[in-house]
Image (cartoon, rainbow, N blue to C red; front, top):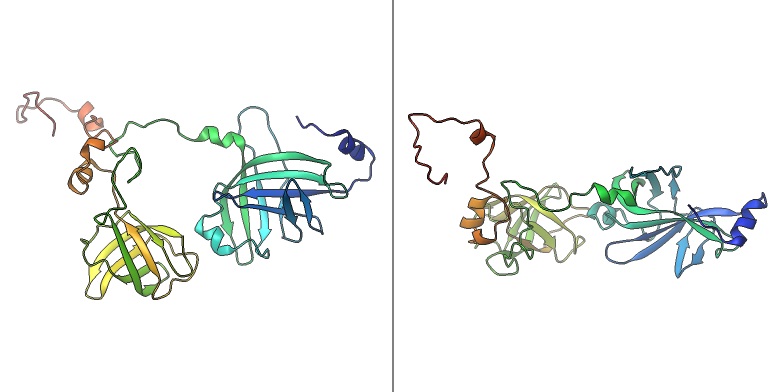
Amino acid sequence: MKFLSSELAAHLAGGATTLCNCWKLTRGDGRVMGFTDHDGDLAFGGVTYEAAAGFTASAIESSAGLAVDNLDLAGALDSERLDEGDLAAGIYDDASVEIWRVNWQAPEQRVLMRKGNLGQVSRGATGFTAELRGLAHRLNQPVGRLFQYGCDADLGDERCGVALASVEMRGEGVVLSIEENRIVTASGLGAFDEGWFERGRLVFTSGGNTGAGCEVKLHSLTVDGAVIELWQAMAREIAPGDAFAVTAGCDKQFVTCRAKFGNETNFRGFPHMPGNDYVISYASSGDVNDGGSRN
């Protein structure tokens, strides 16, 4: 149910209205941005809503129950504050969005129409389309632990305990050459074994991609230096001389946790859990049936 001020209710009842839509977007880093489909900038609540940003939205529909209400938000990449590289880098992922219906002649007359978070974002040559998910989408997220062979902790987090900042787990390199904006040959990583950084994360510390990162797909060694292949191309061009930091990777398996990190006591999976093959197995005269350990 929407609650309208008496002034806004009287304006709507008057027949001729001066209404527009405003979008308030709050990124994960705390930066707040405002946009409106009105032909002039508006300001309220301490936020300036930029006009002529090319924003349009599909019809707002709400349903009863716990079904997730979605709508699409489309925009042109013509705002000085909207950057294609930031969109590609994931800076706007899961950003909080508020949609307001505002009387542009008197912005204090407004009503909050929808609140949610940005979902899937698709980009084109000159614009983008973003899915806006209603608050109920949080109920679709898994809560609690899963019983599985693999570890469900993130390498280096509190449950894992591996110190990723240590010199054994973290390397710093400089780009020597680039292919397809995702495969780099770099110096500074010669002390690490081949494959050490696979499934790890590389974050650029200088250049056009400063602060942006990507998961490492492959890590190999050549006579020219270490070759790091990322899972996807970076949003901005990588250039020779760009510096980066890269951390070790983990495949979430118990043997890797024990052999690579010596951290088996903090392994957060269930490597000894019987699988389907064990459930349907049967005793055989050729097997060792002494009830001993399955390891």
